[in-house]
Structures are given as structure tokens and as C-alpha cells.
Length: 214
Image 1 (cartoon, rainbow, N blue to C red):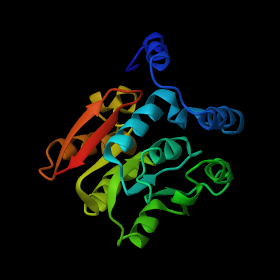
Image 2: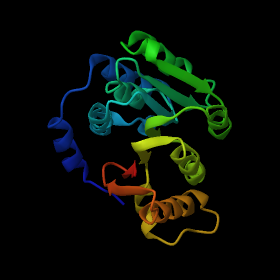
Image 3: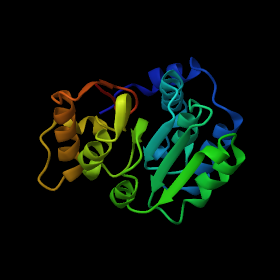
């Protein structure tokens, strides 16, 4: 199921602020060197991440799921001058790519890369507090990630969860072996009824949930 037609997506991308040359190069290399380049946030969603970050001016950002670092750099654009972004990924073979672009960016000294299983790394970060969190990793653990980070969110902090419409599959009854769809359905229901937060889902690309801790 298409959330937006390709024609409308093209129109939207022509009417947003431009991405940096560094991000353009990163996007090109992602398509050249990875087998699933569609996992990249892309210009439209990237500008949304940047805009939200700039509105919040977070001191600490957490990103679960680095991939090639495009979203990381977009989120970093809104960091407070003394802020930092911690990004977690488990792909040892690909981590060289985001690290290369992080080193070239103006945020090189503000980005901390954590390599490993996200749930284990989150346990190691129990003393951190967050103003902004972006979840874009294995869908079957989204509820686990949500519950873990929510307790460490500052009041007014925002969690962004990507792919929450899951190609429209959330509208269907999940198949018994489709853990990803079932988890995302449960997450969306949980968030909508969670008195600790207020939320909405934007139908951008594959759906992004904006969750604000009260």
C-alpha cells in the first residue's frame, strides 16, 4: 500500500529546504554500497527530523538504528552547542560508512557511536537522560525500546518512531509468524492509550510516530 503516490512524493521533495552536500554524497554512496538503500531516511524525512530537532534544541539525542548515518546527521543539526547524539547499531561491516561521514561533518565531536545489540547498549546507558529519541531499528523490539527510553526521557522530550504504518500492514490482521506487524500494531495501540504521553502519526513515507512525554 502506498501512503503517498510517487508523483506527490516528488512534488514534496521539490518544495522543501535543500539538504547539505555532505548528505547528498552520503545518500549516493548508500545507494552504491548497500543492498537495502531504501532504509535511508531520504531528503523529505531528513528535513522533518532536522526541523523537529531544531525546534527542540536537544542537549542529548538517542538514535536506535544508525544504518549509514543520514538520519543521525539530520538530527544533529538541531543539537544544543554543548549537546551530543548517541547512535546505536549492530552492523559491524557497515559502520565504517557512517563513521566516515560523521568525521567529515561539523558534528564530529558531538556524535558517539555505540556498536552492539541495542537492548544491551541501552542497559549500559541507564544514567543518561534524553530530550529526543529516534527509533528506526528491528521492528520486533519497538515496544521494548519504547518502554526502556520513555523512563529516561525528560519531561517534554520527544520520541520519534519510524515505519509505524509498515507498508499499510497495520490495517490488516497480522499473520501468526509476522512478529514485526503484530509488534507495530501493539505499539501504536499502546502509545495511543498511554497516559504518560501525547502522540500522533504522520503518514510520511512509511509512517512516523511523534510521541511527547508529558
